[in-house]
Length: 98
Image (cartoon, rainbow, N blue to C red; front, side, top):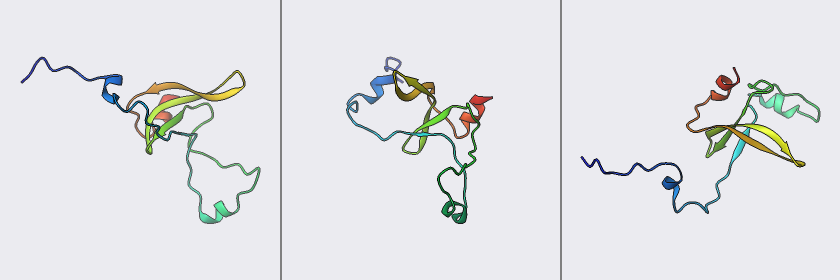
């Protein structure tokens, strides 16, 4: 066993991939609708989501949660502020809100 092996952490792990753009999705919440309910949606319809007001949103890449984020406004622009980065499991945003 080699005890001199260097631990690869953080940015070193992704060296060489820095310029690759990946799609990022911020999920506010989810719900299930029947086809009939979906076809009846119109402007002003309120759809109930599985998350509560004020709870953090999930940031996803490739359909996998990678961070919890909060919406922010700065100098007229909207964006997100990272709250928790790392191995996020499904439902973690519900736990973080409690």
